[in-house]
Amino acid sequence: MVFLFFLAQPALAELSSGASDRVNDLAGKQVYHSGPNCYNSVSYVSGFTDFLYQTSSMELKYYLSEYCEENKGTPKTGDILVIGVPNEPFATSFAHAVVQLGDTEIFEKGASTGLYSSVLSGAYPTNLQRELKNTFYSRRAYAESDYAAICAEDPVNCRNFSCRIDKNNSLSLGSACKASVLTKNLKSVQAQLQEISFNRDRDIDALLLKVMSDLNVLMKDMDELKPGDECSIYYLSSWASVDWHLSYGVESEVLRQNPKLELFRLKLKTLYKEISSVKKDSKSRFILSGGL
Image 1 (cartoon, helix red, strand yellow):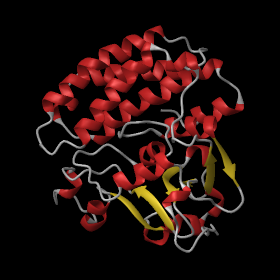
Image 2 (cartoon, rainbow, N blue to C red):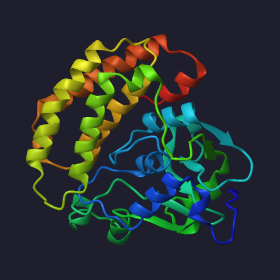
Image 3 (cartoon, one colour):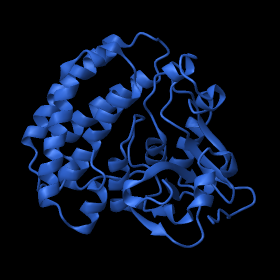
């Protein structure tokens, strides 16, 4: 059983000021082009990233490892609840993540679905009402989440994490990462993915072509990164998120027909193998478990 009790009427004031502002800003906001997902919503509210895009499970595990500790006691407002697939190893079974807002309330993005997703076109057998709900960021009762039943089935795979954030809800990477041009290049692409996700126009091909052009920059950065570097896992997990967004999020023929995305993915796989061969401490194994 997962106990979610705090105050009868949860107050966002108990979140950091930045986290509260981000919840209030996003609640009720709709995504148009699929991409931003549950892992990103908790990362954004918690101050781990400043952009809205599809976050890989590896990137979320990086943040949990660097800035959070599992809270085995009473869940607190602001905790991240990670829900794993029942009866599977937790580290490789991430299924959903939400931010705790109190005893019964959470903040979540139910899935990576956007309003223009093909699953909402009626062409596929699906629960249209549920998928439409998932295009929004929502404050809702925990019991209303599509994933609540999972915790009842396997409470061991539902774990709360309390994270270290400052009063302004901002976290910085180590100085070596923060000062790197690689971070600047990465954030540029993340900002573009956010722009695409909330673009009301259905035709986003021009924007996607710009992103695909900038993949050249990220691939050059991959070539320069040494597997044993301090920031190697951070960049690997963040680049994996770019791949997730372009491969499994936004839908476009421009992407399907562009071989550059496959080359980007192949370089990621090579880098993953190289980093896995040198980063063997327990924290790194947790982050890297499950692959890309």
